[in-house]
Amino acid sequence: MSLRIGEWKGRQVSVTSRLIPRFFWMTASIDVFIDSRCVLKTGGQLKMIGGSSSSFEDSGTTHSVELTWGHAGLRSFPIEVKIDEEHIAKTRVVTGNWPMALWPWALGIGLLSWHIIQRK
Image 1: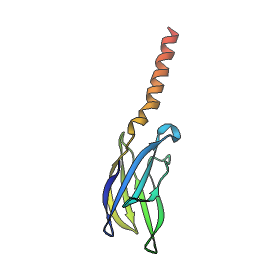
Image 2 (image 1 turned 30 degrees about the vertical axis):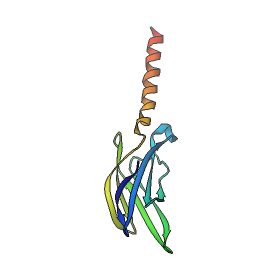
Image 3 (image 1 turned 60 degrees about the vertical axis):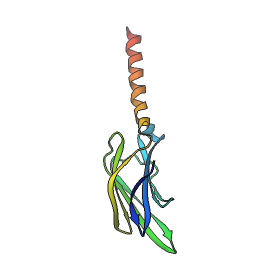
């Protein structure tokens, strides 16, 4: 699921967020796109707050893109995106596969329940 967050030089800027299996699905990769071209991928860092930056070439010129994120809720992250120091957006991005974050909890509860039943 892609979220359109603004424009840069007349082109659409969007972001996606998806949980990845690293660290038991507790990390998300947040990716920034200009039109359909990915210009930044965070790759799933185990940080509650943080940032990532990258450079890309467009029409023979090198540009920088910066993404910062804050504390995640169950389904979304607060983010801010800048391109060449120009503020593009400050918004929240919904993580497309957010229910995957629930399976470690379900597994833990299931194992605890099984352990309690076995002790009786």
